[in-house]
Structures are given as C-alpha cells and as structure tokens.
Amino acid sequence: MQLILMGPPAAGKGTHAAELVKKFNIPQISTGDMFRAAVKEGTELGKKAAECMKSGALVPDEVTVGIVKERLAKPDCSNGFILDGFPRTVEQADALEKILSDSGKKLDKVLNIHVPAEDLIERAVGRRICKTCGATYHVKFNPSKKDSVCDNCGGELYQRADDNADTMKNRLSVYEASTRPLIEYYKKLGKYTEIDGRQPIGKVTEDLVKVLSSVKN
Ligand code: ADP
Ligand code: AMP
Image (cartoon, rainbow, N blue to C red):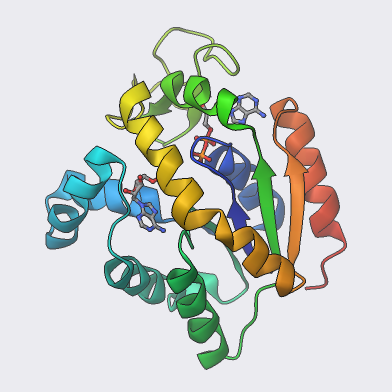
C-alpha cells in the first residue's frame, strides 16, 4: 500500500504514521526525520538542510527528491510505504509520480489530516520527542507519564529547535503558499481523503484505518 500522509506542520502526521506502521507493517518515510538525522550526523545533506530548517523554509526540491528517490528504492519499501511530510510542493509531487511510474508503482491514497491553523502553534510548541526511540508526546494533549521521560523506552524527551511560535508562523505561511495547492492536485487525481484531525488521537487513527481498510493491496 503506497500512501501519503499530508497535513500542515504539527497536524499529527508523525503520530498517526507510527500507528499505521504497526497496523499495516510498512515503513514510515519522514523527510523531516531524515533531515534531522543528517543534521545530527553533520553530513553534507545535513549542512544543506540545517539553515532552511532553522528558519522554517523548505529544503530545495532537488535535494529532497533525491533522498526520497534513494529511500524508496530500498527493499523494505517493496510492499508499500507511508510518506510523511513529502511531497510539500507541486514539483515534489510531480517528481514522486515519475519515481513511482518508473518503478511500476502507483499511489493508493492521499490522506490529509485537517487541523485549523489556530490549533497548530499550540501543538508544535507543546510537542516533545524521545531522543532514543523518536516517540512523540504533547505536554497537554498526550503527556508522558513521567515528566521528560519516554513511556516506551525511558529515553529523554526533547523539544525541536523549530517548534517555537516564531518559526512555526513561517512554517505555516510556507505551508499555505507551497503545500496547500497539493490538496487540489490530489483531488484531481481522485486519491484524496480528508480526516478531521481535531479529534482525539485514537479517533483520528480509527478514521485513518477505516479509510485504508477499503484500499486494495
Ligand atoms: P506532524 O508530524 O504533522 O508535524 P506530530 O504527529 O508530531 O505532527 O504532532 C504534533 C503534536 O500534536 C505532537 O505533540 C502530538 O502529540 C500532538 N497531536 C497529534 N495528534 C493530536 C490530536 N489528534 N490531538 C491533540 N494533539 C495531537
Ligand atoms: P517536519 O519534520 O516534517 O516538520 O519538517 C521539518 C523541516 O524539514 C521543514 O520545516 C523543512 O525545513 C524540512 N523538510 C521536511 N520535509 C520537507 C520536504 N518534503 N521538502 C522540503 N523541506 C522539507
């Protein structure tokens, strides 16, 4: 099953992708996670991505498309994948269509987690992530049992450098200008379904799974 999980920054893509990974046993491909790992490792890719990420701008399309193309060619993607945070521009969406058609694949579904702009800054600023296993929490909406400690693995929780109100405002305007047009793009391809992301986490997952149950493998 080849899926895109779309939505504005901090809508809940990563949170729900993690649930869908368990349920459908296909990998989550998060370009944001790949860039953060590269920044941490200090690779050439990390150096290219760091400045853009700090300000909330997008990493250039050719860089982003390159890493996704490489990742999708890995054997664990042969039965499907969940793209999280990619594509974010029409150019990236066009490139994805080409990557898939060149390998005889197609997208099955594009799921958009809809959350209104006024909720997104609070979601981002309260987000906490485990340094060890990457699990995502929220100080108010999905707190860990023990402050700053991951429930799953006991790892330390941290706050992303770009999860502050200022950078988030920029990320939201970038979303409006560059990523929102993809809603029409995928509607036209007849693959688009919108999910109400304002509901509690468990209900959003339930709605996503319900839509995906009707997708043929
Ligand atoms: P994205 O991957 O889209 O940037 P995340 O999955 O990291 O977003 O979620 C952003 C923040 O919002 C996290 O702190 C997460 O715990 C929280 N969150 C996710 N889904 C919901 C929800 N349905 N209701 C309330 N908070 C949520
Ligand atoms: P995310 O983890 O999805 O919130 O992404 C964090 C940051 O990584 C974004 O603000 C961008 O700077 C960069 N990024 C992630 N995915 C993409 C993408 N598909 N295209 C360009 N930049 C991206």
